[in-house]
Image: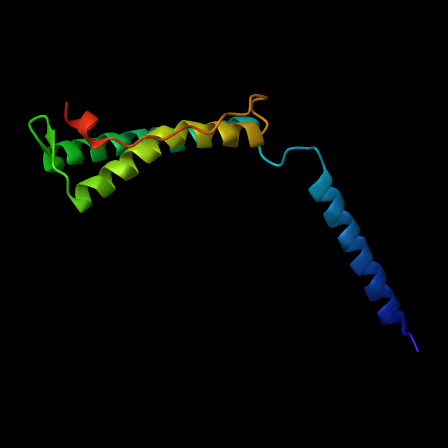
Length: 120
């Protein structure tokens, strides 16, 4: 036999599911556009400043004049630096696109890692 509590529980469960689905399918953005854009600017500035520090470290550690020191650590640092430098604009553009701040969907970059170019 079904009790009143069981029936109310089933109705509440269906109501919660229905409200959850409506919220997920809704076209209304969840976040404030200005706040979201400021967060993206903050992330961009942080990554650019950290990139400058990493580049200075690479130049002081891995460059002897204009010659690149070919070591595992130096190659790893250069790979990380170039990848972040080249992919950051793409990811920030994609966040802006997904956050509905722009209609332009960015194209993924082609990342080419060459350590010798950093020592010139």
